Amino acid sequence: MGRANYSFDGETVVVTGGSSGIGRAVARRFGGAGANVVVADVREAPKAASGEDERAPTHARIRQDGGTASFVETDVSDPRQLESVVEAAREFGGVDVMVNNAGIFRGAPLLQTESETLDELYGVNVRSVLVGTRAAAQDMLDRGAEGTILNTASISSEFGQANHAAYDATKGAVMMLTRVAALELAQSGVRVNAVAPGSIDTRIGSSHSNRSEPPESGWQKLRKDIPMGRSADPEEIAGNYLFLASEDASYVTGHLLYADGGYAAL
Ligand code: NAD
Image (cartoon, rainbow, N blue to C red; front, side):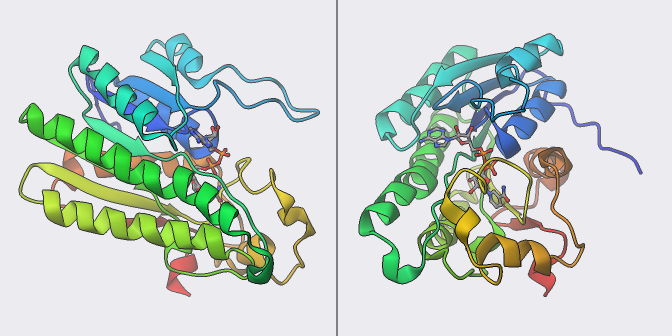
């Protein structure tokens, strides 16, 4: 099977949450396609879990591969920090592709879900998408440039899982922000789309208390229910972001592209 050979030569791509998982794979793929990649994350590389090799930061890997990349330490839940990443990208001619991908997971039964947990999730998973979209779109409009905004949604944007109320609510919000932003920007040359992953092998599902979930709830049930019968590597879905940012998707806006092993077809 072939692999698309996109070219983003000289274009500036900001990837939030680009130090790990899906964001790292997306940043590396854009870097390989000639883009000037700005990785915005709270940390440069994930702390190695025991038995795992320390990995080079994404921007360092992209440079090793011959691409151009930089890292900006950013807490995306702080609007000023995220806005300043977009401002800094003006140095490279402005943002052409904004990937609002950073996200965190917290799981708990609804009756034990603290309202502070919802606030924390909203700050990282939702407010950052609004702020990143607003800042990048304004930058594109100011320059009279066409551009693309890509959000990482989830199958949780549309399908709920027991014990995931707060997280799933944030991903539902990402879907709506994608659609409404696409509508408002439809005639401006700025397209807004989302990739909605299913179960992808990253750190997000292992870093929190969901190991104690009963088997018939949450992540474990989700993995069991996937029609293709498996999770995916981040590299397997990264190309979807490049497709949506490319000219091949020039008539696609407000769309959620499920990369989920068939889950949304259930
Ligand atoms: P991950 O934990 O490997 O990567 C998330 C990255 O976001 C990390 O590098 C982390 O440092 C960064 N991050 C977290 N909080 C941040 C903050 N406040 N500011 C800046 N960066 C921050 O997980 P992932 O699975 O690659 O997650 C990426 C996105 O994919 C998330 O939005 C997640 O909700 C979504 N998603 C993941 C799956 C999955 O199965 N892995 C499924 C659907 C959607």
